[in-house]
Image 1: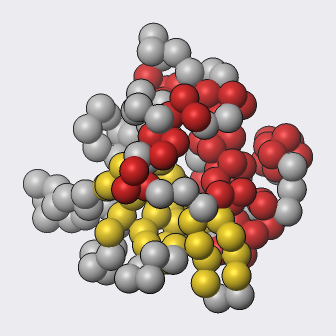
Image 2: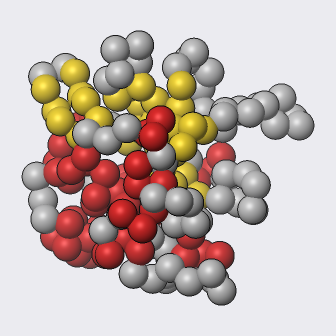
Length: 159
């Protein structure tokens, strides 16, 4: 949690990233070494959608190219995002781009189980910032799930 706090993810005023990250682990059924997502990103639930890990003009990609389909959640403009809890959406305003900059990106393996989970933020309206993109360890997600969302948020702002 100290590393996550040091990253600065979701901590600027109006950002929703920490609240989003507090919600996301509750949507995972941790079953031994398999971790099943409890919503269907292919159906756009919670505003989720496929994430295309496009090659940038410099030849780089935001995430490792592991052959698995990536998905993103957290865009508060997307249809279905209104199903996210109020505490995730509470600071959202179309007038301030920082209120909708954070995302969680994850991939699913061939059996539909979660592989990798990343947090990131936009650098502009089209791109995510590679310097603000971090892989989140499954054990950290389990720890977050064991906490009440407000306790997680409180711990993150106190570190």
